[in-house]
Length: 220
Image (tube, rainbow, N blue to C red; front, side, top):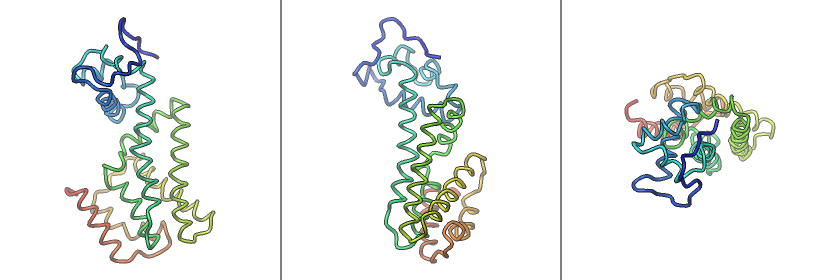
């Protein structure tokens, strides 16, 4: 249901700041509410309280709540899809190194936000238009990983299946809320690489990835 615009609000105004408030601050508040509590709790009054501003401030930047929803989806696509595609396209001497590039997204929260991904998927369960965006994003991610496998001479159908197994294994890991700690992930790195690629990873690749994990997850 649309939240009504208060009298005198400037819907769709081009102005991007009003006082100390910004459009980006509202988007950040929306992302925080979505990731923490789901789309049902992305409400103007709730966000206004979080930001310590009046409810009418929202309408300086957005015509309605649906415009903010579109911004949230765009943010999710940039945050969680673009890094996967970028890393799948990175050059690597071996397929195991290429897979480690993608694994960076799973271990570095600066590259992929699991809570946000799960929240958008839950949103898609109650909104067909959002589900369509999620399905397209999944297709783009899998396609990028499949093209990565193709670069290492896997047959086309095998590359596609390996991409699906790699990608949906991790998405399922997040959806089920599995809580493997850093040390367990590192212990399982070699078997995962072998399972996903059918090839043994060289020691230097494993050691380099372990160093990266310890750097981005210093507390384990």
